[in-house]
Length: 102
Image (cartoon, rainbow, N blue to C red; front, side):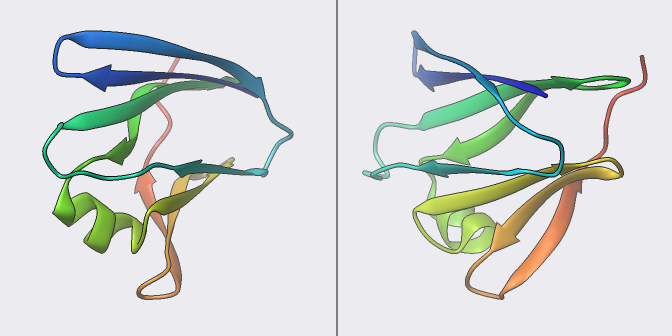
């Protein structure tokens, strides 16, 4: 499975590279937040017969940090039936995206 990520800061785009993960592996993102920069991290995930273009894996936004991740580290799981995000605050893994059709 390939995960290609980039940081987006207002008008700046920083390529973070491509990661190769085993199937059903966890992928985590950890960032410092300022709540003033509007920084986002987006990843393009591809794997045999599955694809997802530019899923938002982190956003420097109080709602995303507190409600979606439940902290400054977001844990993602890319499974056969969808893409999941673990929320520490509520101790639950929830499906947040489906794979796109090829």
